[in-house]
Image 1 (cartoon, helix red, strand yellow):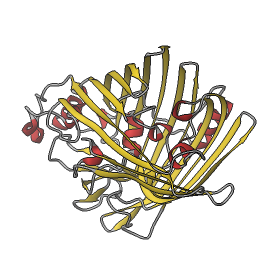
Image 2 (tube, one colour):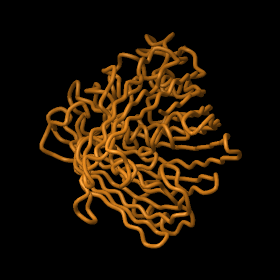
Image 3 (cartoon, rainbow, N blue to C red):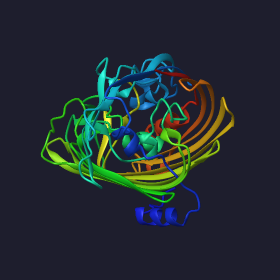
Image 4 (tube, one colour):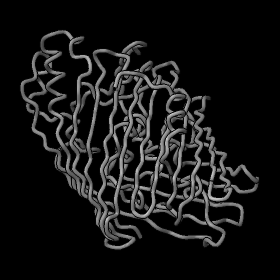
Amino acid sequence: MKVRISLTVAILMLIISTGSQATNWLQLQGNEPPNAPDFRVGGFIQPTYTHIQASPVAGMQGVGAVYNGRYSTLNLNWPSLSTPHQFQVFRAGVAMRGRLNDEINYFLAADAGRNGATYYKDAVLSDASLTFNYIPGARIRAGLFKLPTSEEALLAVNVSEPYIYNSNAVLYMLVGLPVEATGAVNPTGTSTARLASGFSGYRDWGVQVYDWTQRGQWEYSYAAMLSNGNTIDTPRDNDDRKDLTVRFQASYLLGKAGPNREDLSVFLWRQRGSRLFGSEHFGMVREGAGIKYLQEGVRLSAEYLQADGMVVGGQAPPFVGQPFAAGVNEAASGWYVEGGWRFRPEWEADLRYDYLDFMKRSLTNEREFSTVTLGLQYFFSPAVHLIVNHEWRKMSVSNSNDIAAGPARDNALLIANDLGNRMSVQLTWSF
């Protein structure tokens, strides 16, 4: 998929589409109901086993021959990057939330699991916010919390995320890799970089104005957030520039409530800001639009995303110890379509296809990823459920003929063909 689809076209397609939905995450994550207690504690733990069907690379040529006998990082489990087969407590979250008074809500949460956010630390503060409900039509939330972006990024991972791992499009464009330059900045290609902290986990420090209104069975919501665009380790900004992220959603309410309410919605969002890389600031845009439907045990959703400006990829070449690749004038686009069927009260089957076209402005660096994920969930109780996923993963070198014939081209194709399928099992226990 090489043709750039503008957000305007995506929005038009979304408007004329017949299906749609999304839970109001702005309300659920930022507000407490009027009868909520002043203080409550909860959390969840997610022990996870992942098995990637991969072998150490063999046949690398030229300067790449030093990597023979090692695993590509694409076939290793984060954050240890030590083995393709790993058991870990993927997430271990604890949270406190409640009301300071009738108009002010608070939310605090931490994560002590083993994931990208905790790459450098044993535990991280993942949420810390206050919500002020004084102004009709303009609630104000301040602190650290999820940006109002993609539906998949907003999902509560313990109660509404049907898959163990994110789609490639959402992961590569939105997870947030805070990096700093390790050499000269290339304005037209990729530059070397290193991680400045753990992943942001779709979060940032900032201030958000938002609200929702209901007219009959229709609900309309909006959010506009000014945020730092820095690491989430500190509320301090590293420059005087802010990101602006906006999201709009229209939902036709069909029944139930909460994180798995039944509705039919359309949504669109856009994030614009800049990142300090080397000694300069480089623009960054992320935007997307999507649809989702959930009713009587059937879920269907799709979302299109695109990135422009600052784009950060993985390690290049993809082996432990190598620098990350950052493009300051790059582009990416991708999408996913997925669905689920709760065919019995305790059983659900899920299926997702996701696609990502990455580093699109560099003929030699462009890569395409596609994944088919088949999932099965078993719900022991409202607080405990098990997910089993199998992912058929494919990676393509988009413009192999533009890479010089010989070791460089052969190595790129070898690494792409080496990408292994992934099987994972995760137990979620909420308390």
